[in-house]
Length: 425
Image (cartoon, rainbow, N blue to C red; front, side, top):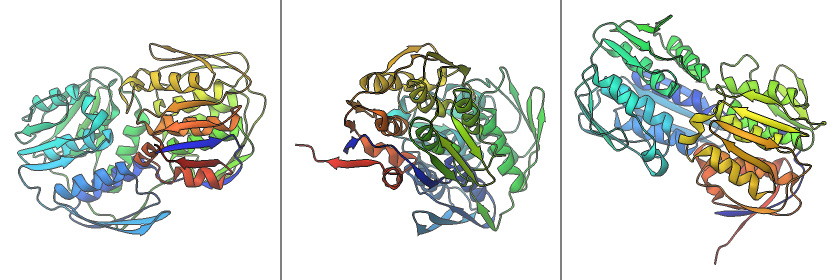
């Protein structure tokens, strides 16, 4: 689907959708708990649907009711996982990376598959760690057929490749017959996501000991169902509205926790450093445009937020440098390259570095045509940027927002955005 966007300043108030990262983890823990848990969330994205489908294939009985803004998943977990199960992660890296060790802890043979860009993303470090302890993977890229049930022991793995590898092991190791240890050979990145995993595990009765070298996990633990869980607001997707306020008009986002474990809450501090005016209350964050200036920062802990922040800084006075984003190269797209392509198509002066962006600010964007590159975050960045363009923005492949935020364009219109689908041919 292609969308034509006419430049209009965004303003008003919007409720943050549920954290995709939180919903994934709650669903997985509930599927491992013998009994019924109910999880409440706002948005049924393609990524969440992928996790639900894969958990069903693993034996969980999941019933989803409700509509946009108010979904409930009733999860009957703790059921046996059939040998030879086929788990489809679609295009969701979180689903694949967390479920690979979880499934290996529950059965002796299964296949994990995916689609499009996910099949290009390597799993070598996780596969190597699992091979140390009883599970052989047929490949280091999807599709992967895993053979041999995971055994307790020492799991040696790099910490600077993906926090999701560590989270997947943390979910799996309590299910094993004996104690295990995760030993990190390099410092962990995106530690906030690991902390979110530990928070979910505690809620479902699982204990993990954090050590200087990594994590110690007792075996033979039991996941305990939680009657009602409510996913918190999503800082990652709210970042687009916060950045929209910084370059547009006064905009309020409701439903975000200022004490959240989600590291993307750091976006507020970075926008303030660049000159944005921000007001915080218990349940609302209001951001409005002010005179913006270039800044330098390391975004290693918030890679998902970097394209949106680069969009803001492309309109700031002076130069900016963003580093720490090397992992953006293996997202749904090479997100360093596609962010540069998106901003360049709109007249910005942005170049790629090995791990980020060098940005020379301008007063406004131009009209242009943007290819979303099948990457939801590129599509949302281009939409936010359009409000400062000198003419219409044509966004190719806008349907990719369904991956994480299927109601994005509905909310865009609620905030005053002017966009319409165009028919090809």
